[in-house]
Amino acid sequence: DIPNGFVDPAKDLLEGGCSDWFAVQHVVNVEDANASVALAVVDAPLVCLGDIYRGRWLPQFTNGSPVVFSYALNNYWSPKWAGKKGGELRYRYVLTSGQRFDAASSARWGREARFPLEVAALKSSDKLPGIHGTLPPAEAGFITLAPDNLLLTAFKAAEDGQGLILRVYETAGRESDGVLKLPFMNITSAEEATAVEVPGKSLKHDAGGVRFRIRPNQVLTLRLTARAAGKG
Image (cartoon, rainbow, N blue to C red):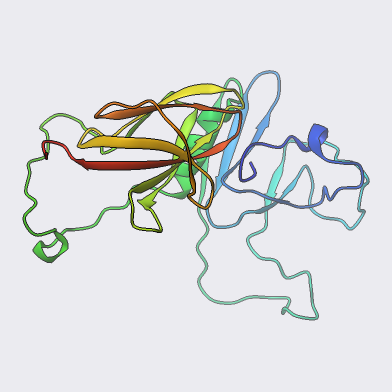
């Protein structure tokens, strides 16, 4: 995958484009008529597909082999790097398989493999003064986003301090109607925004959610204002 989609090097590379190495964002997928295998390269994103680099500089990519070679180390360039490395090195890879490649599920799985859930202990000094509450006994989430081909890639305070910025990425290559909800907050305004957070078109919303239209493989920026649920 690339930052905003998937590339099939057998179809999408321009003639003369580099087919010797590929930089993987999260996951590389190989499939035939019977099965699909996905590899998440957590620590070593540079790969060769089909064969190791042999210096042939082929004008077009050939997919004669399903083998994926991951560059754990790159020591080909002798003027700057030694031909060997020492020390303890750790490389993580995650594999999964299925019947067919699915862009949306692969995009989500690849990110989950590279960025697992982070766990941290909260101390009293980490909590805001005057804000108290109880977590719901059932399963709950701070943010929900539907449908499944949409991913939340950013959630932060606006740079000007006025509201919240959320970025949504469409992963399946199809135009979609999205719904984003903040169960513990009441949304008071919602707008599309540019990448530099300039507000634009107003969006339909109610207290708990906002509705929007997103184009294939688009990264859409939303600008919201909200207050804690139950507050006036």
